[in-house]
Length: 299
Image 1: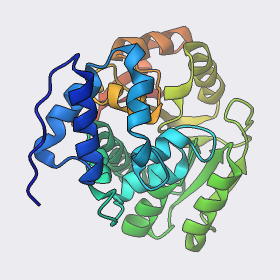
Image 2 (image 1 turned 180 degrees about the vertical axis):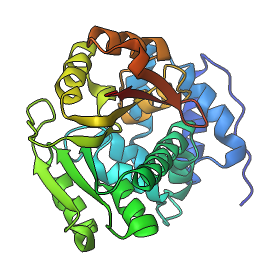
Image 3 (image 1 turned 180 degrees about the horizontal axis):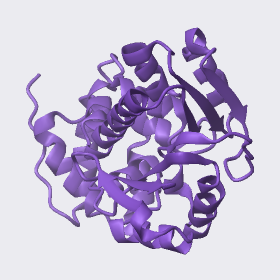
């Protein structure tokens, strides 16, 4: 296909409209066009966002990952099906939508989500090497694709068990079906993490993609609450998108997807507000530096 994107400059609504029409008619941006499209989105004025979305309507539907985020079929952003598709790098094969999905999947935020999964698997791998019969609690488990991949690739369910917590019954049903062969090692609990009360102690309490939606007061409350659920040498690991997330504007404009981004200092402060000894706290990051991991040790 002979693609010759139109030149445009900011403030020229007609040329921007023509440019968006060109992208939609041609099935989305090619990699060489990513920078131009990202620049357009990043420089939109607040009063231009609604008009921009109106022009993007042909792809803001369940046929694209961007559209899935925008229409929120389960009522909230970043739902379990979207996260599962990010983990698996799923792309719509329809030529009208394929490039939009490739664009989405190649953005730093999506890569950081996959890096987050890899971080989890490496952590669990190290955990079972030093701990027999490890107990793991996952808050906001979503599709549990990370648990599935770990059990499939590393352990086949031996020497570790997972308790999964999610408020969405559809997410629980999805993860139960996905992890059917591991049901002996996985328990499922449909409940809000703010209300769950555990009678067990855990070697790892993990949460990815949940605390990004909490205000600081809820974040602090949950640290205090779940710190008491750690085993003697247990650790809590909480992921949070960084303020350095370069995909922030794309997520907000295209998918109406907002997160509470935080710095490393923010995470240390929140742990301090939860009365955690600073010597028990550290912050790590995945290779892109977009996902931060607040780590809190019991001892």
